[in-house]
Amino acid sequence: MVLFVVESPTKIKTLRKLLKNGFIFRATFGHIKDLPKIKLGVNLENFEPTLYYLPGKKKTLSDLKKIGLKVDEVYLATDPDREGEAIAYHIYEYLSKIKPELKFRRVDLIEITETGLKKALSNLRNINVCLYESWLARRVLDRLIGYLISPSLSKTFKKKLSAGRVQSVALRLIVEREKEIKNFTPEISYSLETTLKKDSLKISTELYYKNKLYKTKNEEELAKFLEEHILKETFFLKKVEEKIEKKQPPLPLKTTTLIENAQKILGYEPKQTMYYAQRLYENGYITYMRTDSVRVSEYAKRKAKEFIRLHFGEDFVGKRRSIRQSKFVQDAHECIRPTDVFRENVSLSESERRLYQLIRIYFIASQMAQAEYLVRTYIFSAKNLGKDFTLKTTCKKLIFKGFLKVFGDEREEKFVDLEKGETFKVSSWEIKKHVTQPPSRYTASSLIKKLESMGIGRPSTYAGLLDILYKRRYVTRERSYLKPTELGEKVCNFLTEKFPRFLDYKFTSKMEESLEDIVNQKKKYVDIVKPAYDLLKEYLDLLK
Image: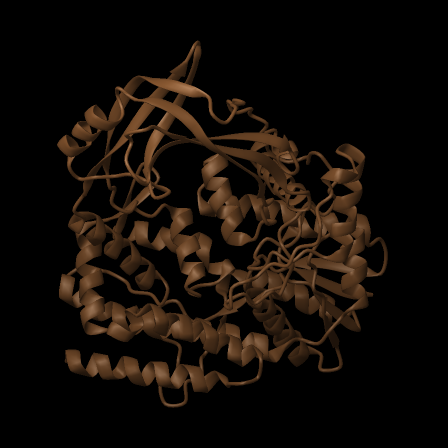
């Protein structure tokens, strides 16, 4: 018999359908060991952490011990990320002390399906100690920064407050965006829109100068130009430009784009999205949902093409395309996709079903052909219009739906056919006022997207990030937008002044890269933790 350990009982239900005999399944219900809750738990001389078995896990550990004594082998199938590696390592640590001859194998369950399980069991591996050390370094850095900076904050503001390695940098982004908005000075400009008429045909055009929309800050000057050069003129179609415009299909989803689209399309908050995605994964409906990659396995590509051929035809099958991924991408797992592209629905809650549909549609669309538009630009001139001035209009017609077919986005735009040399008169006009707008406040999803683009934080940490900012009342939400409170601004200013490097975007990003260096055996745990603590101590000494 083999003890097969996972994190969640839902996974066990799915696995029992796939593995019939020879396995005893148990769930850890998350971490079994961690740093202490009420003290630092890190020796500041040698940076050795002291991790404790969690009090609420006594029953789980007792059960694992009982079964561990009866079996010869343990399969550790906790989540395929650093958190999962840490749980696997701690189970190994616990059971190997009880029964040293036990064999341990790590199982990477990217998808909980017959195919995924077969692949995982064919590629059993040892626990990756470097992955574990990377997790430990992150956990200790978060503890040092949180526990050593937070008392300074609480003392300064005379209330219980907290700082965090990623949390405080996220707060700084929100605060700086608010400053940009407050300091923004709008600029006003004017452009001209005219309607040209020939018989019953009306065409809306705009005034261009040297192929750019003509804008001026002087409204009177534009009104004068209109009077002298446009209103009394007869316009003729001088030129017709035509091109085929191709629209690329979307990429399959990864954690940040799943969060972004679920908020935009379904109205889900990041934490909701990741909870529903976890349920879909554990029930075997989607691949692992914490990923920074848009890579697709060859098997999944093949199945998607079969689906597209069957439902849409050969012309709708997409061509292979090269995708440039950010330098921060770890690419440990493929994209978030359905485990079976032919499965149209899932037997879960309505919210989970809607998220599944979103993941499935984006995946199918990502493997389809480009959409194609016929884009035609009509350029009009007149005798007294002036050198380099023209009136222009562009119309667009969808000529091949491509991936848009799966989205049902097939709106027809107005398209007219005109002959070169045709003449028109101005039937109406409008001077349009343009006021530049300040940058928008971040939403939860756009903040997460920004952090990812800067190489700050990881897919496993994004969903819970905002909870702390809300809880500490550093940030409030106005509709779906994030606004710093007065306290949030003061805390951010204090941290930026007193702990500048820890609030620096590049420094935080470099720290993430250093954690990856542990995985790649370029650095050791202490090489990351010690310099961070030394710098932190310098700042703390200056505050005394």
